[in-house]
Image (cartoon, helix red, strand yellow):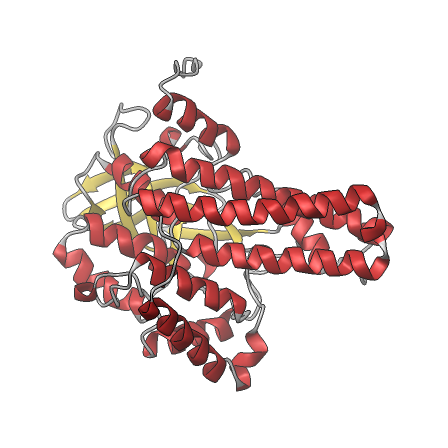
Length: 400
């Protein structure tokens, strides 16, 4: 990938930087740095207002084609936007699942009617979405889902349970992978359904985390209903849609994520300087290793983005998506461990009663999940070994 920027790209960077400086003021200035993993419940309503302010000024869905309400920006310009957004310490967006995952999936696989119904409201941040993939018996092993849906007249009837559903308590809709063909197994017989959450057949229960937040949820479907035409792709062919969506998940917004990682790393370095641990040669060596890893991660992400067609699954371009997930997940988990090593004994006690954690403690606790959510390390390595390198498949236990 050519990493040089054209004059147009630099002009665009200046435009983004200037707009953020002019608009992250007043009440919006108070939102700087809020949100993100472990803190997704912070000022949610206020960050929603900020997202709608972005939408009103044309700064949502910037990579979508213009015919679907986006700006049709180039890959490099999308990268520039996410980098500058993160550098401005702007609040974490609340519409990621709609804008970055479902919207592009509908553009790629949805019907014109589905696109006309949902895309404008996603772009305007008028409807929020959550993701119904993981289940108690099907976390990273998505093909093992047990949630069922059956067709009755003009509706699908859904029964089952999803878990680790981020921000379901705020969502108007959930996209659900459900088994619609009785007797099917693994990736066969699954469908990708769009289901409204505001109905009697959907119950949402929060799951409190070690970081004290409850952004994750359990979602129970008991006779939940959605219209028959709200299936993306053909019934029974939902596996391909689900995998395509996961390809969008590892898109350009990951570059903004990495700017956030750089800010966390800088804070750890600053702490090491303040408490003197930077003079410890072991810690200094680990800090240097983290700095090198941060740059490798950025270049690897740029290379992967240049090789993968939007919506490709994790095996595309030599497993670029799986490699990226392995790299950033493990780097960020190690940063959390390093933060605790730098903090020393102070990292063992809360700031106040009963459980007031500082940013470094939250970083450590939440980053333990980085190698699990979004596809665990084991799953990513299986994809690389079996689907990219062509090695023999791992033996699977017979299922009842």
